[in-house]
Image (cartoon, rainbow, N blue to C red):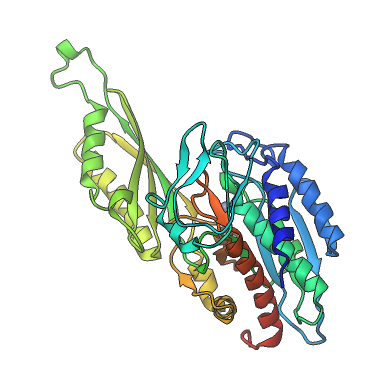
Length: 415
Ligand SMILES: [Zn+2]
């Protein structure tokens, strides 16, 4: 049995350390305060009995749990990030425990009248009778992804204390700066040395994700010609009208607010316009590689078509790929999904397999040679004051990690 109180205490010890990352910083970690938790985590991994605990100059932490079986078993890894999102403050987090949740409104902060209500967040009703950890309404919680870290550390501790559970070599990796898109950047996949890994960074109990968007950004610069408006006939070219023509020629319903599941989109995120120049910022997203390429081609063709109406090139378009759907890297090794699914089923958790409408560190790691699907960590309402996590979900994720370790050593999925 997992020690519930010990795990609650561990989680609280993590979230009360401020580790907010900063997209405007060039250093790694992006904020020096991330070292506070990183150093403590490295110490804790040593104290529970992990081997080869290392923390590099960028605060990436790695550790090994040696195999306790004689036969060859694939080396698997579990990864989480210890930074929290710069979207909302992570300083002075004061976690609150709601025991035996009754399914009603939770007053996060009486003074400021901040309520966590199932009327808005109906997921709460999944956790009636459970113990929830919430914020006091003035900060985020940081269950994203300190729940993941807590689960991995707790699972390693459990496996160390229960040598009767057979497992192969397990690698643990904790990263800074995931929330600003750099968690995987300096991750040393070779040093990590796992055949595959799982990020513990999903939300609801049961989530298992191995598909994410293919992603690109596009900057569309439209060059006009400024002339005195009183004497502009036949001379002025207003870049804002040309930009509008470009915007309106793209499919209006293939946008974030009209799409879901596997539907891709063009998203106009910013317009910066004057007569002589207008710049449009887009992101392009699609799970399907062919559709993704077709979207990029369509933008280039549209620019070409508009340019052909003018004597000079009025539109320049710069498209940059950002990340790719990890599915392409997971499909050849589908047993890593099968093992995770089987582990959940054995623990009476219903696997929820759905495409991520975004990217994960795991998608980058998958393209760096470490296939890396994502598993639930249990938290909800990430990056804001309404973030919460049920303790039971943390316990379940911890059990899933132990069960995956056990199944990998005892079943022959990978043959
Ligand atoms: Zn996260």
